[in-house]
Amino acid sequence: EVQLVESGGGLVQPGGSLRLSCAASGFSFSDHYMNWVRQAPGKGLEWIGRSRDKAHSHSTEYAASVKGRFTISRDESNNSLYLQMNSLKTEDTAVYYCTRDFGSGGRYYSDYWGQGSLVTVSS
Amino acid sequence: DIQLTQSPSFLSASVGDRVTITCRASQDISSYLAWFQQKPGKAPKLLISGTSTLQSGVPSRFSGSGSGTELTLTISSLQPEDFATYYCQQGYTYPLTFGGGTKVEIK
Image (cartoon, rainbow over all chains, first blue to last red):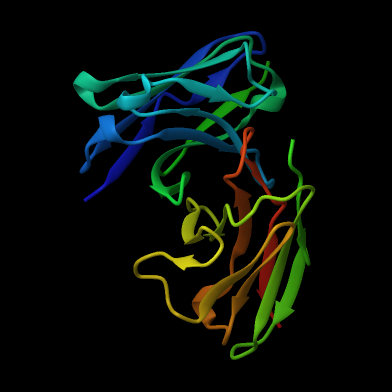
C-alpha cells in the first residue's frame, strides 16, 4: 500500500526556517517524481515544486513564489522527500502536501497524497 | 504561467443531477489536465488524468473531455458522496497550476 506521511510542520516566526519531511512507503521511491503542494487556510491548491526521479538525477522545478527560498531534496536510502523552507513569510502559512506522481502520455500526475502538515508563519 | 479558470466557482445541485464543471486555460494545454476531488479536512484525490482517463476505483459517473483551452468534468448523476470541491490542474508546462476550484453543494 502506498503511503506518504509528512512531518515537521509547526509554528515559525517570519524570516525563520523549517524543514518538512515526507516518508514514502509501498512503492519504488527512486522511480517516481515527487511534489510538494500547499493549501492556505480556506484557499485553493498551489503547486510549489517537484523532484524528478533517479533516472532524471532528481532534478527539481519550483514555483516562482518559493524559488530561491525553498529547496526540495530526497534521500533514497530512507525513502524520504524533504522541503527546506527558508526566509518564511506569513503568506507561506498553509497545509503542505507531499504527492507522488505517475507518468502518463508524457506527463506526470499526482496519484497519491499525504495527509498534509500545517505550517504557520506568525510572530 | 498558464492560468486555469474554473466555472462555476460554486454550484448547488441535487442528488441525481447531471453536473458539468469547465476548466479554461489561458493557452493550449493539449490534453494534459487532471481533475481532483477534495472533501473538507482531507487531501485531494485524483479522479481523472490526461483529460479523460479515469483513475482506478473512481465511479464511471465521472468523465472528462475536451482539449486545448476548454476542458470539462462531468458527473452524470450526482451522488451524496460527490459533494466536495473539485480542482483542475495542468501538467503541460511549469509551473504546474491549479484552477481556483468548484465547490459542489447540496441544493
